Amino acid sequence: MPKRILLTTTSYQDTPGAHHDLLNSEGYEIVRERGPLSEGRMLELAGEFDGFLCGDDEITDAVLAKSQPRLKVISKYGIGLDKIDIGACKGLRIPVLFTPGVNHTTVAEHTFCLLLSLVRNLVDSVLATRAGKWKRITGNELWQKRVGVIGLGRIGQEMVKRCRGFEMEVHGFGNYWSAEFAQQQQITRHISLDAMLPHVDILSLHTMLSHETRHLINAERIAKLPQGAILVNTSRGELVDSAAVLDALKSGHLGGYATDVMEQEPPPADHPLLSHPKCIVTPHIGSRTYESVPRQAMRATKNLINFFNGDDDVLFANEK
Image 1: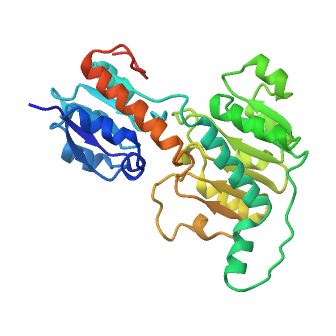
Image 2 (image 1 turned 90 degrees about the vertical axis):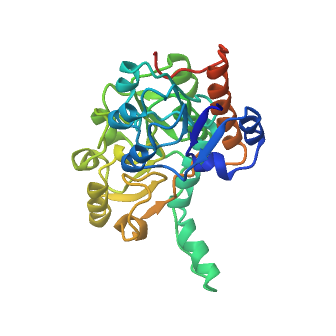
Image 3 (image 1 turned 45 degrees about the horizontal axis):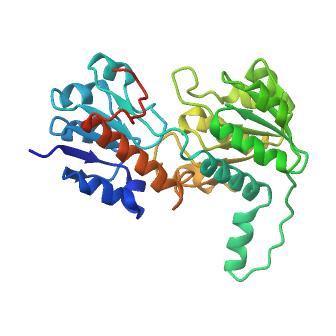
């Protein structure tokens, strides 16, 4: 009997590349779904698969329990593990594989694209010219502005490099800290997030979602930012209290919010941030390029195949 694999990541499915040939070459039975899937849909599917090749689907304790005893491995497309109950996986001895180091430049590029678009009113200007109008909106420079970067891992470091290219004054906060990189890029380190907030004009989020970081940016912390500060988020929507951001945009305390992620994806069509004039929302495409997707997809596919074949070339996110 061929192994049965549930493939849910739409980036993988929608982007051409050698990853499709590699996956098909193994003779697996592939069941394709358009993720990210809710816990309810995962529960409907669970129990009939040897492996998940997944994106940001809700793989909860209940889903994992129903997947037994057949499920042997979860191969995550990407690095975010907050939708997977890692503790339950460990208890059931289900390895979780992931793909670090394949999309950091791509996400950093998109982050800086959002930032530039926001300060230069790019969206409004383009929409105006497409409508036949010549609406000349005055924007702002990024040159020598103060930026605070939360999380100095791979993506955060790539964002810092781009900021330094604009001669921005970089402030940083995070658990991981490379002293050598910080010295090279002239990053001012802060002992706490609250201590950093009053010193930055722009705040860029590059940290993982966890119980401790959920709503990391809330009304209290937004109030500590200078008047007119800008917030950029390409990590997880749940890092930000959307209601607090909306209030701050309305009051003018926040000068703008640019995000690639939302607390609920896709958000309701009438979500107020989608149409707010000081907000830019892209549909979680930060790592979705023709270069990055095949890199991630190949790594996720090789992880899956190598695991089943007993090959050591596997990147574990957890220990069985």
